[in-house]
Image (cartoon, rainbow, N blue to C red):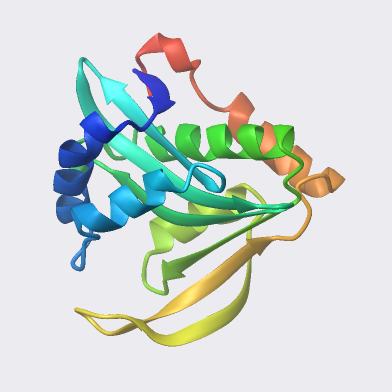
Length: 170
C-alpha cells in the first residue's frame, strides 16, 4: 500500500468510497471544488494493489488545517490506513507551518474519536444536530499546538506502533 495525492482520475473511486462510508456522502461536484482550490486543499489517497481504499481531505489556511473528510474502505478498516493518512497530513502540515488541527466527528463514532485522541486531539465543543440521517451532534476536536511536547510525544507513539508504509501490513 502507498499514499499519493488525489487526482481528478481518482474522483469516481473516491465518490463510490464516500457512499460506502457515509449516509450523506459528498457529491462529485464537492470533491471537484475542493481539488480546484489548489492554494488551500490537501487531499491524499491510499492505494492497495491498484485500488483506492482510503482518502483524506483537509483545508490548510495559514497555521491551521481543518480535516474535511476521511474515509476508509469498510473491508480495510482496522489496518491502520486512517492513521497513515492522518500522519501524512500532520507531516505535510508541519512542513507548511501548521500549528493547529481541527475536525468534526459524529458523537457516536467512538473508533474515530479514539484514533483522534491518540494523536493529541481534544474535544472542545458540540455542534448540535450537525449530522443528518440520522440526526446527531458533532464533536469538534482540536489539536491546539502540534509543537507541544505532549502532542509530539503522542504522535510519535502512534507512529512507533505502526508498520512501515511499504510493508503491506497496514
